[in-house]
Length: 158
Image 1 (cartoon, rainbow, N blue to C red):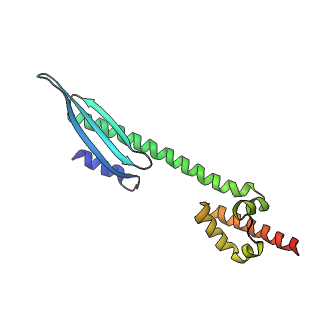
Image 2 (spheres, rainbow, N blue to C red):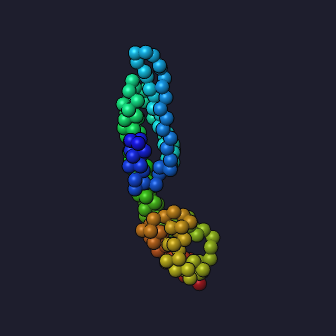
């Protein structure tokens, strides 16, 4: 079936499409002309989408609905990709814009500087990536800043 083939092609190499439903309805039955409606619903993360096309020929309605759906999915994916890129850039800038003391206060707050210093760079960076969602680059930068602030705090205590 054409609809199934097109929907599978749309889902290829993407994990955002999780299912679809296609319906063809006859809206007007007359002796001279028919009107058909095709509705396609795609179960897609983060938001489902639907298209409806009406035509005198059922295959024309199906093809137009598939074309409209492909455009809608493509546009949605492009917007999400731009949003993800923007979020990634923000994650890099967050750590870059803060001083070592601000990074320390943001991510480890009132923890003992000696214990933080003992954790080491890799453990701190890993925790920041997992718990805070920082990119690897931002997490290691923040870990360096945290270690620097922890060392300064230990030095001033003495």
